[in-house]
Length: 495
Image (cartoon, rainbow, N blue to C red):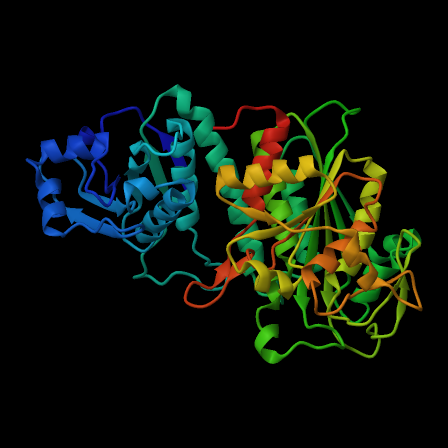
């Protein structure tokens, strides 16, 4: 979907649909007031009679409103004015995007962002509205093409504004493309999106963007480096693992890069510690960490940010066969530390520890890994927040602030030394699971042992990377949080 600026009055725009917002008190924004006056008070009357729903995320489509050039008006409820904040505004914009996606309209004009609240700037509201409409417009069609009579997603959305909004729209478009990339990769079936597919997608990213270099390490290369933890996980699969290294150079060579490391388990059967059938059916999403770092990297490359970024994806499939690694095995990681395997379904930390050690060669100033690492994180935080652990208060605060700014939020969890003893093993330097108690925390503690000399953060997106139920599918999170963090670190003023 194309995002455009057009500095014309909404009253005179010939559009398939004009989108406005109203609060629960029937309070009209500037645009809504203009439409109400032009239509002889029709919007006010419909609010009074209850024909327009003002609850958060409710939508009402009005046809043929007098005094307007637009053929339709989509009124989006913003809920009570005193409760309106960034997350609720984001929910309303997503709802408007989904409504338009499921309608026959191909193009629309958006004015939902002229409702003021919580000290937000017009630039931020336009950016978030554009991002929300774009995200709501997402529809997976790669293996399920649209039928001839199906409504099609929007082709374009136009926003009122002058040149002072141009950078806001550019940020929205870049962030939206990052989300879209992450969601498409997550939604693809595992017989298509295997390690080789992720590598080929990285080839496409590198070939279409300036200042991007790509290196793909094969299993022979990883064996020479001593990545036995990663290769141990891949032994049971017919699909060979890949270590994908994307490098974006937007600053001088001597500036240390930010390293993003993603868990790319393209399908997780659990290995010999096999999952139940109920849980296994969604394990194509276990590469949600890889998808989100690739999405954020794409956003950075689109914006041509003045920073250096390294994106490392450990792409592996975890399957059981006669050569699969076993509970009781001891693996030697690239760092030289040994790991007793108690559960082959705790494989993400095994591939990540080698990827984290490998990223040392780039001397990064900070390292951020992202992984759908633990079901315990879903229990702790549900599907609304990404779990965050870090050995740096400053980095944790920066990531939390980035998530709040783009409404892709995280919640910090403790990384206390108290939990480290749960990983003690009589047969190796550590074991790969610490028991039921504090499972999300001991997983983070495991990874911290490979980042003792680096400023590092771990994001567990097991709950936030995808949804199930009526709205099943990948979310792309936390691609937005990461992209906003990279924007902030670049020194460019965010909208």
